[in-house]
Image (cartoon, rainbow, N blue to C red):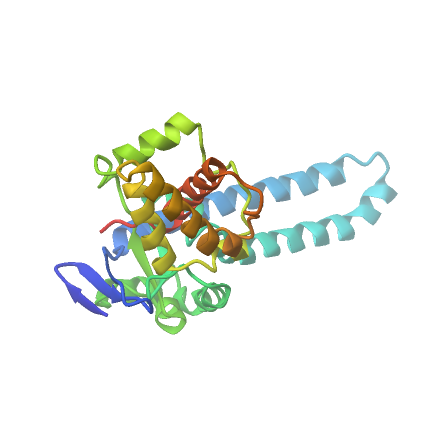
Length: 269
């Protein structure tokens, strides 16, 4: 990996060269503050709800008996939410917490792939050290001085926080967007298991993207042949049944898969 002109060049295991804009201290801090505000509001809601439940009892004995269980439940719930917020959202939403999504940044692996569960666990466990001695000082200093804007958790977990792709290439992709619109397709038209989606890499994305961009330019017979080959190579891997499907149905399934993978693999270059 090498850095030039505020860009990070990454060579993936599929020998594809990618470039990313690393997210600096400002955008990362803003995203973190948004996430902390959300957690504070959720925590406050839980605490207020606990007190309302206790105050809703009519007799003092019932109130006294309810205090330990209600408070224990509230404390456990607050702990679970605060401990799992970053881990769960980063892994299951492609490296985006709510704050990161609003600010247009995400966490990825150093090889350009989506963050793994282990990497997310490591970087979030080390968040405790990054928050020392107070006010996240260690993490702030690391991000500010590190050449790739990494905190300790990123270094150990092998992750990067980068800006997402904007609207570049929209004109080039106009044909396929028109095709998708004419067919009335959306990313929600087929259900693909999260673990199946994570089995796809940059190689599959480049293949599907090239197919989609050439879709309307290919002669009909050539397009049908290519669609059958693409369907045989990609759809079973996504856990989708191809047997008995017409060519139009296979094409639509591939285009929907393109929409799903686009959400995961389109970065700001």
